[in-house]
Length: 95
Image 1 (tube, rainbow, N blue to C red):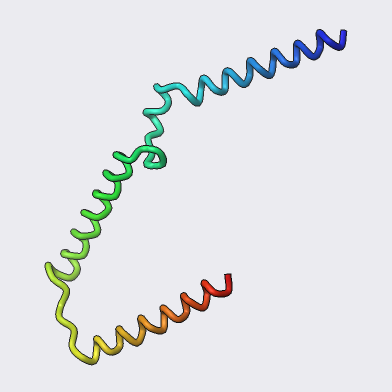
Image 2 (cartoon, rainbow, N blue to C red):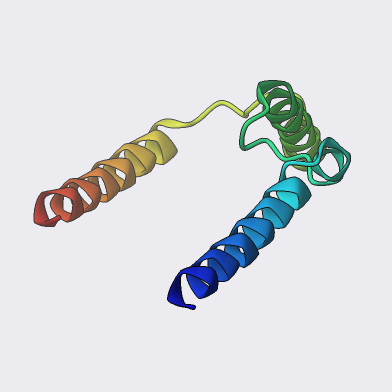
């Protein structure tokens, strides 16, 4: 009796596992859920689209080229960048 019960439970679990595997490994379902996780071509396409959108947005907002910096603005930006880098370095040391 115990042996037949073990066999029945094993068969039911094997059937459930095989049905699950068939569902998730079905190529028809795979095409429905294409992501860039394992597909380099999709990842490159998404990256190219993102870069193109960002470039178009930049040109729309700021024109074709970045304006030249005057001395005061450059000094401010260098100081701010140094402070932000120090904060980042401090955070990475505490981790």
